[in-house]
Length: 149
Image (cartoon, rainbow, N blue to C red; front, side, top):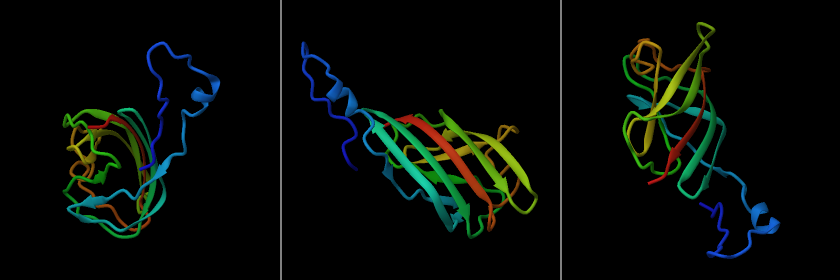
């Protein structure tokens, strides 16, 4: 991972425009894992993150080319290990079920320090309730914001 922001300032130094312009270095690409009891093959349409100090911001869009297993939570990999507090809300997700032309909106929560899962309006993880499997041409798009370990 490239360094995202290194102002290198000491107490009493002037914060210049040149230093401020160094904030917002290029976002880093990554390949998120996607599982639903099994590894789900996918096309990563967009997957990038940035890190400023301990803040991680993630933006991902994927299209499934394989299938998961119904009755199991969908998990995605984080680009940087989280200072995990399992169950914390870290963002939002939409999941498009291409076979039924249905769009699901979910809350994204930490599953552990390396993966996230998605809570549906039933209060259960998507894949368990509703009891559905990811399938070819389904799409997933999410944004996360969390604290790095």
